[in-house]
Image (cartoon, helix red, strand yellow):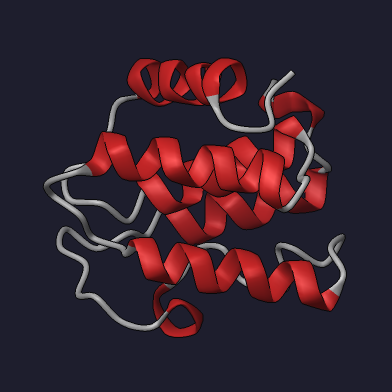
Length: 123
């Protein structure tokens, strides 16, 4: 699924998440987010602000409540903002990489799939 992302997005994802510090202090989204405006350039300004604001509200660097937060973010990205499945999963992965410890890939994919099945607004 990640191979479907544009090459520019993949390069930015690798560059921004490979240098993640061991512990991440909680800061506002624009200072601490792997989900930056330049990565969401495909979105209109209103949607971009919604994604950043909600992601900041959920928080970064979580140790507890990561699964619940991941489910909420996945549902928000897909059904409230209307991101494509690839971009929504990318944003979720970028957020997850800032948690200490982050969820493993299998768990994150399962949470994303569950949000697709059971979230309000899902088909």
